[in-house]
Image (cartoon, rainbow, N blue to C red; front, side, top):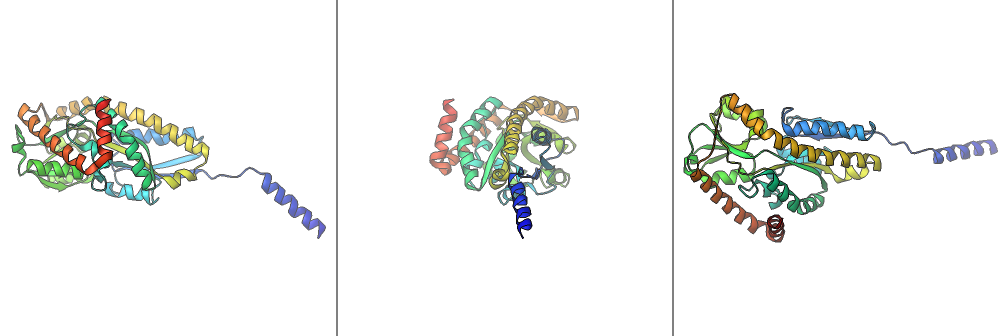
Length: 325
């Protein structure tokens, strides 16, 4: 009995003194966009960086082109930890809270410098909202400026009346309402089919989306209104993040900081490339008339007024901070 006790005591001592074994972290990260998309390119490098910075101990699988979850499903998947991380377009969730609608408001922030300032003003409120839902904001990257794809000539907002307008978010649906178009909800993965079948014949989006979905095969004109720069955000489930050891948390945060900077630079650099490529494939890149821009600006003013009423004190604080920069 004494011998058995001694063996058990030795085993316990060895177990206590041995370093704890931590299994490599494995996460899923769904996105709705194809491999050619600038956000996906950025995420591909991001997951490589995470693996490198963690010395191979943290492996994130990137699921592109809505292959794991469709765009409207990704936020819920992250919140419920079905996916530990995910990429969303913030304006897709404008019906949940005004904070998600902010950077989809037309002509509030029309260039990269302005969009970055808006992001800095928005970030504290956005982070707090996500934390209340069990998530954290890892990083965010802007899309290129938004313009109008259409076949007909457009000189004023009245020319948009009656068009079947692709709405990919509540914000773009509201624009359709204000200009008298017919909003049709179509996510990017279904856009090419919607154009081919005539379900939509006008919409506002970026040169990036136009290139990814080969809009030039269906549309003749792109009106370069540079109306706004919506952002994609990479969210992580807070419990999943807290479950990581300190080294893997640090690897994730370091890769995220680099990815945010790289993503904004890539978006800015590729903006003109997208427009040049669309033009080379037969699309006419049109400078909008003063009358069209004036009408769209009034739409933006209306939507900002509506947003401030719904966003309350937080909204006023964000806009005041943004305008004071």
